[in-house]
Length: 232
Image (tube, rainbow, N blue to C red):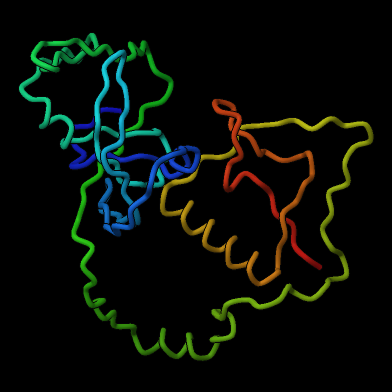
């Protein structure tokens, strides 16, 4: 996606893990997205070659857990190829390229079923002191009284009289479905919690065939779609 509202160009972290012969450079940066949310961009890919139609370009891409697109081409690329002519209705750009004007034709989407808008802006990642949040005294008392409820779990809950179980229908065949899409912040939190529980031995990977484990477009393993089971 070409986005004039994005101050930099971004590459999805799920796509970056499938690239070979590229080096990731640590460069932690905060990225502000639509709605004011902040996402951490830990790494950057410098001087990466990519193609649009038959034309080749080189750009720097920041890694970001994108959900709707694999790549966002931002203002850094647009400014480097200005001035340009744009026809929004016919979805094409005419840009200067190696001393000539070339036409880049985008996809002509007719009556799209879904519309995605994702604006990104890079902010300085210099650590800043967290602003103190005043908690009302009555809330503070409740937090202290029920402090055990907010502790990180270190073991599974005790076995109950009726444990949940889903018995499969005999001779049922697995149905592979596309994994759910998650907002970037929620996806990061899920991966963090799953990683913590794996490290503590509370869960382990499940190899059951009844899992939404492959993306329909690329047939690759989804980092969240792979199911996990609790260790009893």
